Image (cartoon, rainbow, N blue to C red; front, side, top):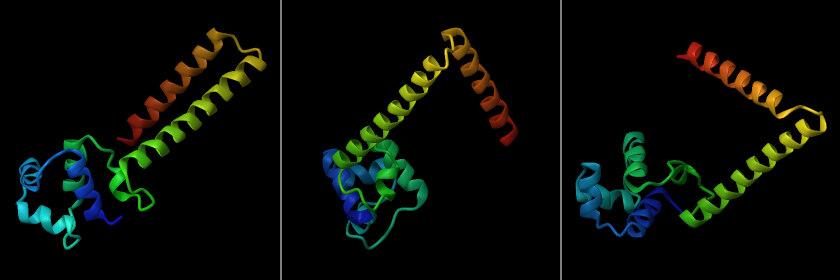
Length: 123
């Protein structure tokens, strides 16, 4: 699915007309029409605005292997389940290593502190 097709898909899924979407993005209706017909492309700022306005992850517009929001959400759920599985694996490892809940909490706080310091130095 091309970018313009995705724009049309999410607009229709949101029950918006091209005029309504144009007004939300502060562009002309003809510009929306050109984008949906793959004759023009939104700039990065408009893509971000579109995602925010329609409450859609920005990644949906950039992934070529995704054609519908349902597919995107299914993949997202699977990835989150994988993250949860990793998390549970770490907890299981902590239990097997005989780490107490208090020690685990201290480790988490330490990691948060280090992450905060790293982020502060990057800014």
